[in-house]
Length: 429
Image 1 (cartoon, rainbow, N blue to C red):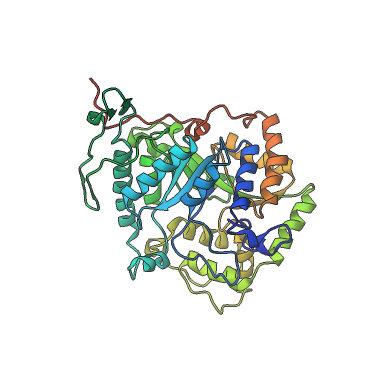
Image 2 (cartoon, rainbow, N blue to C red):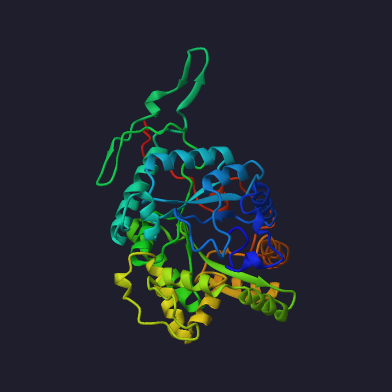
């Protein structure tokens, strides 16, 4: 998130918004994550300019391009890119991720999104966004085609026999001949099968369609819950759906987002949180909130409450985030100003301010009480927020036996404790 996950981070003296397109800045962040023995770095992405560039650091790198550059300066940390199934083609996507997996030695991950805004649709010749359910139907077929393409080369296909002049056993390189509702793809892929077979498959939607998609395809889920009880409910619900797709609970890792505002004392952490809130531009926050709720809030008094909202079934964008924000406002009786402040750090993800010990306590509680398998750490400001987490929270988790002290594997699947997928198209004698 360039300067950090808080929407006012770029105004804080600890950040460097002028480095939003500086490769060395992102390389430093990746090295910090690797120093902390984190599983992966994850790049959110969209296919339109998010928000209003007048009031935030917007406009950055395409994620696969950036992660390829980060692969060259790291050895262990995973590299997860967001790529939409609505505005891409399976062949392009499969080729790019196979390339990144080879370039990184098996550290690629794909955050599969269906895209959630009409602004994105309008960048691809469409006046309106594809209906929510149809986006997920397309996504299922998209992932099916991509995995077939990754399987179109068997691991043993390259034989490299110089004497006979045979580079590849072409009986082990095959067309996929896919013909479906959305795609016709002959194959094979023009990249050999990569170290992980498939990139780690990640998903970030928490609507009913999103949860069913995750239960069928995802190996990690990035999600947003505000309370332990909500986290436990989501965790239990999603894990219970796996059996219907022939999968075991341990085959899917659930990773709620948390934005940790860290201080050496609780008062210091609270002061930093208030400092960031004071730097918010209300106009920007109101615009973002309007997008999340699909209601134009411009011109409404900040000290007033939310107007009547549409029903979730009528939302064609991000249904789960709409529900989370609407419930938060109702549950806590927040006016618009308070809601903008609450969403500034995590856009619906949980924000927690405290000491390193208190942050570690929160992570341990959610992990041990059945609300999380791990976490998506969303530093409110960068690079300092990531450095604070790595240098002060990670050592506490390590001392408690909750987090690795060294990498024990080389691939992203190794880090997540997930197996390399078998080749579905391989012919076994």
